[in-house]
Amino acid sequence: MSKRVLVVDDSATVRQMVGTTLGQAGYEIVEAVDGADGLSKLSDDHDISMVICDINMPRMSGLEMMEQIAQSKTIRKVPVVMLTTEGQPALIQRARQAGAKGWIVKPFKPDLLLAAVNKLTA
Amino acid sequence: MENEKVLQDLLIECAGALFSDYNRPLTYTGTRSPESQNFVLSGVIGFAGRDMRGTLLLAMTGELLEELSPSTAFMRDWIAELSNQLLGRFKNQLLRYGTEIYGATPSVLRGELLTPLQPTCALAGHCFDSTRGRACVWLDTEIREGFALQEPSAAAVAEVEGSALFFD
Image (cartoon, rainbow over all chains, first blue to last red; front, side):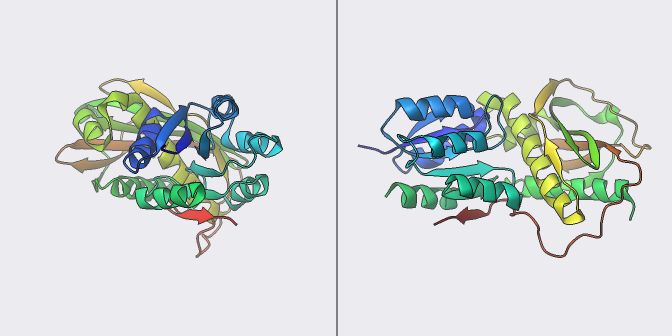
């Protein structure tokens, strides 16, 4: 059974690009359009192995989502990697303190993203 | 250091790097008269910070946008995402100059002839060309009175585009 990866980004194009990269490697993709949608899908779908999450999104940002995941007893162990245009150390530190496992600055390199997913879902 | 020139030069540098990262190096051709530009979509994104606020706009002609896009299904979304990534680079570079800005969610404008201001003005658009078309970027900023950009730090302050960090 293929592993499921939740991709949270308000850009349909980015979701598609990530989906293509991971889909070719055998992963199944679940999409969410913002942090609130992502949190809802992660809470409902217990087969999700990992989350890839943008930062700047409407309704709920990726950092807010990350911090809510960290507070949840049921989903806090699901690894999260941030995929964003942001590169400020303060934001990276905030995500790390909330439990994020990685930070990738867009545009992503497919091999790096895939390596991260392979490692974190192993 | 002239704030406006630094910002415009940074924008040109960031736009060129963005296009290169998508394997579509475009030649910077300076400013052009808007009458000759048939843009189909533009991504617009506002930003604000303690020292400055403004708007960044990225416009592209149709064929070039299609060539750059991973899918023709999401052209509006793609120009918005490209403008978002361009602002991301710009803000990451600005950290080296001692100031921080925060971006809004990008929006999209449709249109063929876009005329923010004439090329004789400092707000003129910067054009990048290939045989497949043209991309143009504008930066319209209001800078806090008395503010001056610092000399840039030699080292990058932010993580660079395409990089990945993994935590224990």
